[in-house]
Length: 186
Length: 265
Image (cartoon, one colour):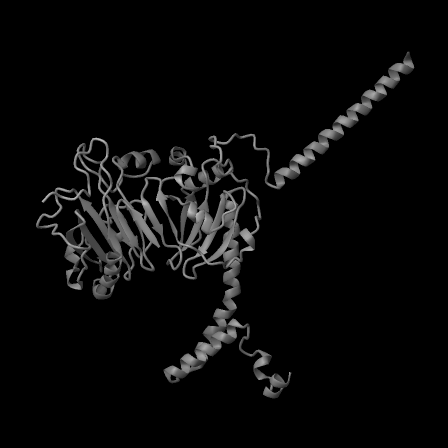
């Protein structure tokens, strides 16, 4: 099953599903109109660039999710894996934190830990790493359902990362001077 | 003069009888058409459709499976875009839950009852079932209208490819997929979402009831297997499974027939 959008192409391994999108500028508008609670993501700042976020999971993803999987990781079983690929602005590309890589890096089992979770969930472990691929800066955040099975579950996360191709980002929006995904100037 | 008036009165009475008969026959035809699903669609389509677009489909209770498809036909994963233009891939085959795929459109008047039913907070799905509403691609749909119709918390995807994969004959149409088996458990349509849900749930219950004797027989055989070498136990289990799949239950007379009789006929 192939998932493609915003310059990312992912050949999902068996058992995975996913989404690639940019959060709406005013996520509260849709939830307020629908009469449901506050959204998990904040409205965009006036000058903020809305960059793509990919969510990949071995379990059904709920509709309302935060960029780093809040709302989704709560639903994980012990054998599940969640991966968020969050793009950062071009000003971050090729900086020391977002070091250039030929492909999205693989995660080592030792990188996973409960202390690396965005919000601690019993039994889970998280890992986070940063990179620049194809001139685009990314944060990779992965969560495994069972910290004890990090070795096996990190292999699943690595399989989906290896199946991800990074292409050119979206063309600039009208009025946007610094397009996401544009190759960074040296 | 009196005779003329009498003749006129008689003709008038005959005409009245004729008109009444015609009206009755017309009403019968309309009722039959309504029962067939054509209905008296006095509610105009919610939006006009561009030339060349597929017309909104009419609901047909008990619609036959597309192309004579068997109920256990293989399912397909769904790839499409959300109403927020997010690329989405939904795992249907091999998923840990069953998936209820609801094929709707913004332009079909019968779909209105479905959209309302999906927005009902009291809507109850079969246990361990995920629901995904699938509309055709944005260029064949009315995205702004869909934004008004789509209930919160319900996943709605544009995916014409899913319509093609599942050979959907028209909207509304509902397909229930057995996630673990990756096969269709049931499909169909009805005037209301509740009706089609009830029909599919009943079909699932029937299938579970049919599967129960085999499960019970397998459990009984497991219990009687006793202590054996792992290889022997595995071989015996495989043979038992094959026999059960062929409809041969424990105690079946064919198991005790003399070999000569089997060979000789």
